[in-house]
Image (cartoon, rainbow, N blue to C red; front, top):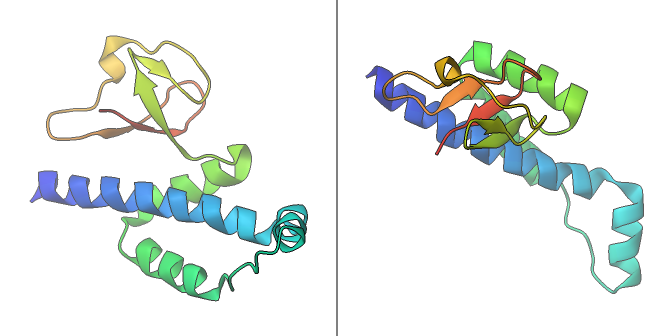
Length: 118
């Protein structure tokens, strides 16, 4: 059950992060103005915000709190890893920073972002 909960949290956090990036663009006035100038009518962000609330309700509270704090600080809360290097702050992490068996999410010891290991 622990491995399954981890996978759900991982997939949900990644979807939440993608949704937050889309919402940030939808709320950014210069981007909306540029889209209108090109002839596109930006969609109403309300359905996206409802879906975001649903996603937040399905994630463990500790991950939500950390996610929100890091998102506010850096603008990107979830980043990938490549060869033990955090792709958010580009610091090489020690091998002990790798997630345990069955997990793919952990925190960067340097910047605190949520790391997605694949």
